[in-house]
Length: 66
Image (tube, rainbow, N blue to C red; front, side, top):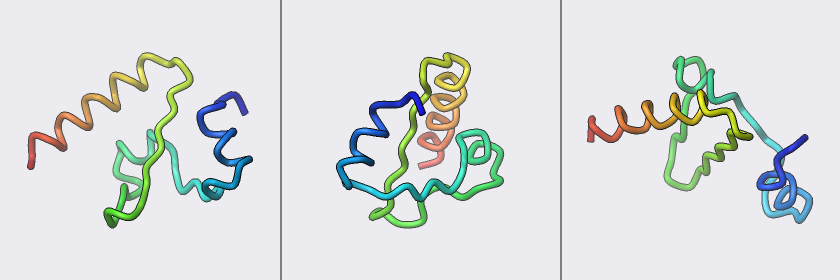
């Protein structure tokens, strides 16, 4: 409702509103992340620092496995 970064492209038809999960579900392993390079993951924190930190930590751990 508050994220112009998401709502404006959605209204312009640049992508559909097929949200499959939340950041929390992704980090807890309840929802899968991307399953192919063609898929796009969108993250919008809306200014919640704790979500930014959790996301950064998860990305760093994932990158360290590469």
